[in-house]
Length: 570
Ligand SMILES: *[C@@H]1O[C@H](CO)[C@@H](O)[C@H](O)[C@H]1NC(C)=O
Ligand SMILES: *[C@@H]1O[C@H](CO)[C@@H](O)[C@H](O)[C@H]1NC(C)=O
Image 1: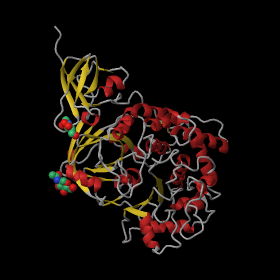
Image 2: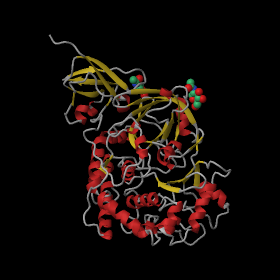
Image 3: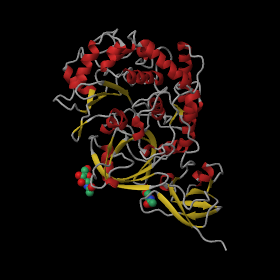
Image 4: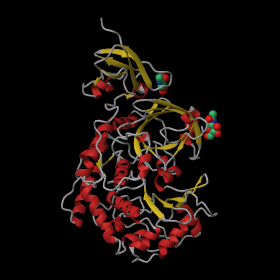
């Protein structure tokens, strides 16, 4: 007689969103109803026996049965196991371990990468289910007070575990993107200091959910994060998650780590004075009435330079000593303005982390980061070591890059800087205040164009294009991410088609076209229209191979691979 073994079947689904009333699991041809707790998204079944093959179906909507979605290829049971993963309805890959492909690592890894968190584990897409009071949710998505914070609870599912957090702060995040229909959020667990299990997850107390509303490929920020890591740059981790709120589908999000004190600790090793960490100062460059190009003068403006500098360089961590949170950035601006245009490399390096800057500028140029420092004078950070110490420059926010709204696909760095701010008709960028035309970004003028530095920059770009920034090196990783995430991308697109969530545009927001399978697929399959991810990388790398005399584009790094699964608890 066959001994009876209990197996556990677990799947995350919101049948109501797709016109259904429940979830069945079809085990070796026999359909069985599954159960969920009220207002939950986890459907469960305890099964007496070991399945061979199985799939899920939504009761009341056979059109999106997994049998149809997976073209008749069911899921197969792992005979060693008595439970499924925390599976997700319609997603073929619960973990991507067998698919993962990395990119070559060109420069030695930083120690800070050892402190990466498994919250962003490669080859996993965790699920977050937020529970918020319905009237507070309405406030959150309609209020003009976009800084409002709400207390929520949420579940987080990795493929292996379910975690529950209470007393969590939930708020909108992002800049322009918070005005769009699909809102970006931030989640802060740190209100529960006495209760460690409830106050951090894989060593992180807070994280962001970026809405990916401008990126039809969903993976641009992730790919550029890989590039930065390959070059040995400080960068926050990026992964994906599914968001559900109050038992409804909200779509695929980017799960992003924060540029805050922990980031400075991880990468810049600030020293302690007694028990207190002396961080130095940290600024975020945000373009406003002027691009944040690091000039101290603002011709034609009625505001004082102090006021404008206060707006363009947001203080994230104020200086340790002193009263003016902007004193260190002003000192840096003064340094850059007085730097001779032919300063030696050694002179620059006394105050400035030249290597980090050139590598980030190479990235901006290669990915066409028109909303970065070299473009709009936007989206960067400057870390200044304590007591007006060394200056470190970092670019960030890479989702509208790699072809999106790029007006400088081809050409040298000089032609890039000249044209990246052009509008779609080829008209030049807005003038700098009351001056007749825009200025060159100060650090471009003083450092990249400096004849002692320019050959170093060109050589750096050449090496990156030859070995990393081309389809030979990036193609396999892009293909893996597409295959692994495709079901989640399509589900995200479906949340618009089925109108599963009811959030709104804020009045001051532009409207963004709804995502579609066609535009998403083209990012990965088209090789000619440079608005698409792969086509852009191909065109840019081939153009630079010609300009810089690169004999062969290949995948080659001396330091292993970036983007593999993390094996240790971080
Ligand atoms: C989820 O919410 C819908 C209403 O939006 C409801 O019909 C359904 O029963 C809920 N699911 C559960 C498991 O409670
Ligand atoms: C909830 O969080 C707040 C801070 O946001 C904190 O002051 C309070 O002690 C927390 N309550 C519990 C029960 O942990």
